[in-house]
Length: 146
Image: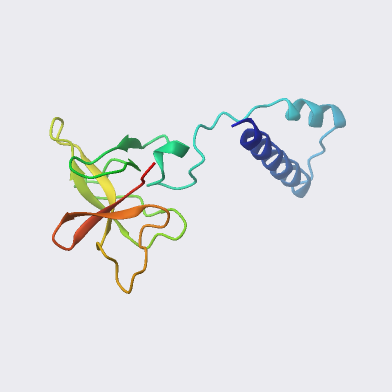
């Protein structure tokens, strides 16, 4: 949204100017005005992996729905030598574990998901703003209901 991009631009500008003065660079008034005309081109409000697709996914993610489950989420591909590694940065409030738990039946590519325990332990929501959907006995995946 426009308000979001303006806020981000002001934040980025403040950070750029603070960095410039911290290393002794001088920024003229003309340069400050030119910097104000730059636009932020990011397409995601999500600051971490496994976010809500309604807010946009990160560059290395795909918005997915798991067959038989309600909701959706952003998922990165599994990486590493054995294609079993997942990014560990998760949205605020999430305690569910990122795991290479999904596979595209067509390509065989593995994808990461936040694996949770349906019903939660002590009623705690392991998925932050998402909800834990039961996949099989005792295992669930965090998805966003939009």
